[in-house]
Amino acid sequence: MTHKITAPLDGKVCQLRIKAGDKVEEDEEILVIEAMKTETPLFSPCNGVVADVRINEEDDVAEKEVLAIIEEKNTGA
Image (cartoon, rainbow, N blue to C red; front, side, top):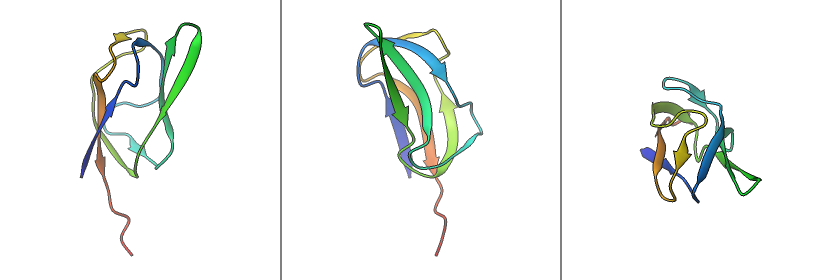
């Protein structure tokens, strides 16, 4: 399954902790958006691999803009 990470608000990317190809864990902090001197962290919704990162640190982003795409990887049981 593919998960699109979208901006919850207008702001600036102040920390980018991922790049395409990185493995991520569910609830891992992947980036931080700063707006009006308040930082809002975004977390991975699943275990997976970062398929695409569409922004860079210091980029201005708009609410609902797609920032990254994560391909979910099932851990198997």
